[in-house]
Length: 107
Ligand code: SF4
Image (tube, rainbow, N blue to C red; front, side):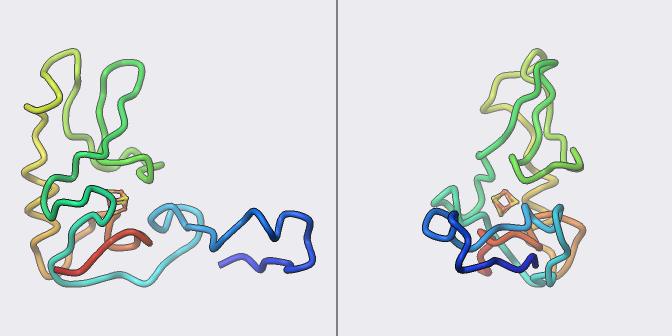
């Protein structure tokens, strides 16, 4: 995690920086069943990002475009297939980026 200078002019505006689910610097992996704390519901994973070509990914933290869940030119938002994400979240461990995310919660 980068050092923050408390005397910097930005210190009053910047709180704890996020690694963007381990994309900017590595994070400890959270094992066990998890869910996304930003959705307010345990298994929805519906805070997704859509690219101009319609490809839709798990989350704005997915800088590596690792978890594609569909394409909005081919299906509607509520029909996107999040089953693999939910399965990975319910495993003891998996390669889901959420396991390195500040917002991730353990079930
Ligand atoms: S990476 Fe973080 S914010 Fe994004 S879906 Fe996973 S837990 Fe939620």
